[in-house]
Length: 67
Image 1 (cartoon, one colour):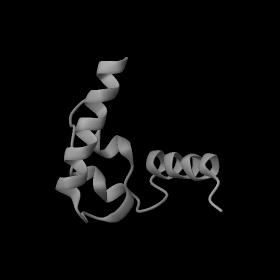
Image 2: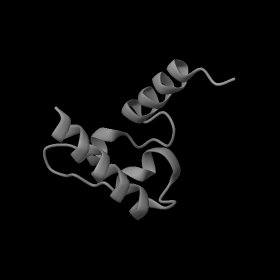
Image 3: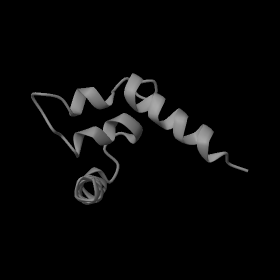
């Protein structure tokens, strides 16, 4: 059985540290760039990058609206 808290912590650690692929969030989201499609490299190369980028933008917009 998957422990969600452990999985989420591992995902965020890997995404912020670059532990999965050597790429990290700050490589794609910083003062100079916002690269939604390129950020897919953090987890799984560019597999379905455009589709996932579009979904991420919608999710991010929803979070900003709710805040």
